[in-house]
Amino acid sequence: MIPYGHQSIDQADIAAVEAVLRSDFLTQGPAVPKFEQVVAGHCGAADGVAVNSATSALHVACLALGLGPGDRLWTSPNTFVASANCALYCGASVDFVDIDPRTYNLSPAALETKLAVAAREGKLPKIVVPVHFAGQSCDMQAIHALARRYGVRILEDASHAIGGSYQGAPVGDCRYSDIAVLSFHPVKVITSGEGGMAMTNDPELARRMRLLRSHGTTRDAQEMVQPPDGPWSYQQVVLGYNYRMTDIHAALGTSQMRRLDSFVARRRQLVARYNEKLCSVAVVTPFCAPHADPSWHLYVIQLKAQEKEARGKAFDAMRAAGIGVNVHYIPVHLQPYFRSMGFEPGDFPEAERFYTDCLTLPLFPVMTDLQQDEVVAAITIAVTNGLK
Ligand SMILES: *Cc1c(COP(=O)(O)O)cnc(C)c1O
Image (cartoon, rainbow, N blue to C red):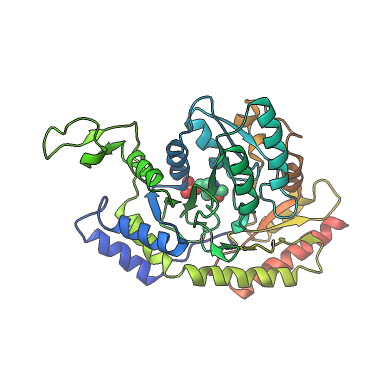
């Protein structure tokens, strides 16, 4: 089976992990701040707070931005559930903004309309979470302008997008946001095993997220709220969690960063090749907005077939041919848990239309041209048969 995504681990990655295993610190050692510096340096952000997943990063980011009961968070329905769950962890409510049918990203036009209505009704969100689907940046300048106008904070879910750029600058620089979150799960662009990082240019947000990732405790006298008992003292000043990244994971992440550029270059090459080879097949290949140079975490096509079950048939045919296709994403508002909060089919029609026809083809840096040719041949047959 050719998988839809796969990590690339080399000898240097293994050596980096082994070195930590032989060192004094498996966690809370020097490898974590080093990883934070390397990623912040790459992204051009002032700071990065490493945690054990992007999901944890979204949670501490929301808390640091002050999200709580009675507040609202808006995100894209075309995402993984974690982009929405972070609101619920904080006791806030969640709502969605429909996608742009070309980029599949949160639509600035839909956001503008929804914000105007919410402002009239006194129901503005505290945070908007744009998701850079497939590694293509949202139109952050437009989203930022709207957020400024309405006093809304911006938390980028950049889980797909490390290595991508927007307006020529790296995703994660937080030029148009308060915080940007990265994921290092093995299917993503680089991996630390599990892991995530919250990038920010705001020292106060970074300080709060560092407190929250480690039980809300501090050994820094400046952060203590009562006189310390003695030199051994630590104080819990807020309710935090154990969301720490280990040194083992951080060392792998740092080692992977050396190959980030080559991973993304190979992804771009494979995407160009897919686009070229699929132009005569009845599918919609990904659209790339002029402001973005995506990292291409995913290669998602849409089937043009009129037949209702076309995607399902193509999915089955590809899996039968040994090709690990996937579907990104089932709109979050259609998940049973979200349906139970009152969301219904028809609420976000563009995301639902996209879901009906989308299919994710394999894409990962160690994929060979030969494997890609196999995928192209199989999808060509699957689509042609589907049209009969
Ligand atoms: C993978 C992913 C997450 C969650 O990342 P983890 O590191 O697995 O917690 C969140 N949002 C999006 C869009 C993702 O793709």
